[in-house]
Amino acid sequence: MRFEEIKDMKVAIYLRKSQHDIDREKRNAIFATVEDTLHKHRRELLDFAREHRLQFTEDDIYSEVVSAEYILSRPQARKLIEAVRDEKYQGVVIIAPDRLTRGGKADQGLIEDAFKESGTLIITPSQVYDLDNEEDQFQLGFKNYISHLELNSITKRLQMGRVRSTREGKDVSSKPPYGYQKNSYMKLIPNPDEAQIVQEIFNRFVKGETMTEIANDLTRRGIPTPSDAEEWHLPSLRRILRREKYKGIQVFGERQTTRKSETGKYALRKRINQNRFIKVQDTHEPLITAEDWSKAQILLDIAAKTYNRKRLSNPFKDVLICSKCGKPISVSRKKGQSAKYYCRTKNCPTSQIVEDRLIEHMINYVTIYIEEKRRRKEIGMDVGESIEIGEKVIKSLKSEDSYQDKNDLIKTLVTEIKYTKDPLWRRDYVELLPSYRF
Ligand SMILES: [Zn+2]
Image (cartoon, rainbow, N blue to C red):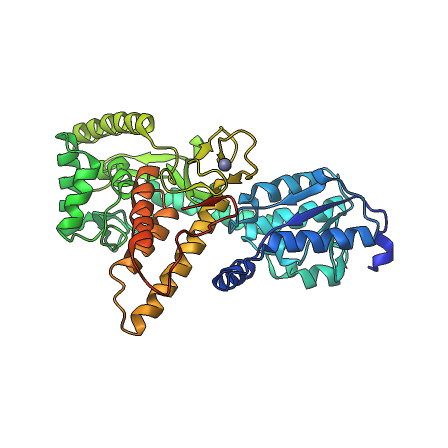
């Protein structure tokens, strides 16, 4: 299709960074020329759209801040695909096709269908793609995917097989739950070492020890976590304490790891459709009595409530201040919206920033910091524990750790940055963003 044909079309503009863009930004940041890819793309696409007299308003610009792996976990993409399905646009303008076509196979099907059925074009500054055209489809890479109808039936068949196996008391999870191993009939049998740890965790928890105490003790004793890490964190303890399989019950479909969350940070574990949920009693040797298990659930619920009340809502508390007026940075968390950080001072010229973006900046900054320190270390300089602390901060920022835990680590790092007198890293403060600094 030629560009003349798209003149005056009603279009949407979709902006999203690719992993390549993110990596490049990180590299550029080292030379202090942080270039915002989204801004650059926005300018390019707007110029292109004006040049071809495309019709759009500010509302038709979908700009993604999260970089989730799955297209449909990106809130803006989801909104856009819905609008495409509703035939709101004649075309969607993107910088390169991979901004829409990269993702899981199920996403692929949905996106392909939305564009095909509505007859919406995919427009890039170098080419216009029409999904009714086989050649264009092939170029977009859609041809390489199984049609999603076919995919659905495969998934369904697999699912049926797994349901049948569960009924027979077999464990269909890809990895047996911590504490167990599978025998050749796919049934669970206790793994002696791990089973002992599971029992210890339950015993101590129902006797009143906190998860933090238990986690710290396991870490201190050098017991590897279920994922073979050194440090025990609350999420993995919680998962163990919530697992019904320890009662000797085989469960299928109780919780399923779904897509990444709205913020793109965590995998969500959701209860799925009740009629696809199966429980079979007495399928294997229990590690925990039903009484202890129930007691643990009550204690977990209480712990969750207390935790929510005491929860620190700002992981950057006492760390970031406004670069204009020096006031501490505030956060606002509203249901259904991304958290926003801002300066409370009336008429302060600094602008607010969404949490994901702030975290992204922080991770970029710490990454560069670690790289600098590594370079120092390579030439024999003493860098103390700075690399380890930096790595912990990044890991924590990417994890489900509580804000309090994140805050503690960031504070340690900032103290370290402020007080080490590395002559090659001499900055009184670090400009994280135009608006905030340490
Ligand atoms: Zn301010």
